[in-house]
Every structure is written in C-alpha cells, then in structure tokens.
Figure 1 (cartoon, rainbow, N blue to C red):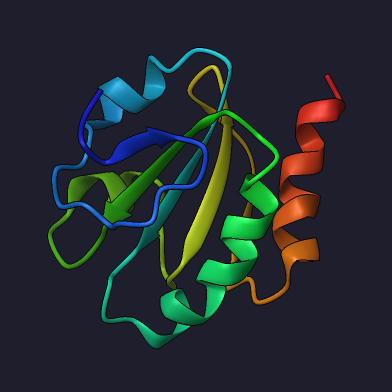
Figure 2: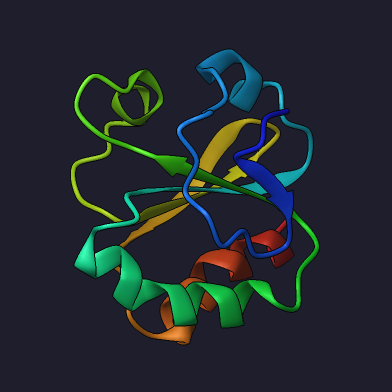
Length: 114
C-alpha cells in the first residue's frame, strides 16, 4: 500500500495517504486513523491506540488529514482523531477522540464478532 500503512501500531501520520480505492481493496481487518501530528486530541489518544493495537497484527493506516484531503472526506471525518475499523474495505465501526484503551479495545472487539 503506502508508507502510511504499517502492521500493528503505526506511530506516524503520513501525508502519503492511500486512495479510497486502495482502502476499499484491503482484505481482512484494518484500522484507518485520521488526524494530524500537531493535534492535541491526537497526541492524547496515542497511548490508548498504541496499547490497544499492541496485541494485534493488522494494518494500521495512519493518515495526515486536513482540508482538501479526499480520503478523510470520503469517510466523512469531522473530528480528530477518528479511528475506523474496516473489514474487507468496508466500515464496521468507528471511535472518535478516544482517550482510554478500553474505547479502542471496544472498537477492535468487533473483529471477534464475525
């Protein structure tokens, strides 16, 4: 995919975002996170995101979002950070501005409800 995608926790937002088509073509589960490195809410969420993702080996697509960025608009992202759990490229659920690991873990728990 792109540099924005890593297996497990991805620490860096990347402007090299995949296209909507590339995200739609993802197989299995993946987490797409929209935000910005300077965003205080994004910085505050990172420990919870890292801890929750530490036990999973799934793609974490971390997208530097902003005005005029098509991927964030395609997913109707309004606030940062927004984490979206995908299954085969389709949205399963999302969490907005998580602070606690349990919030991110709840999002990931949908992977067990196949």
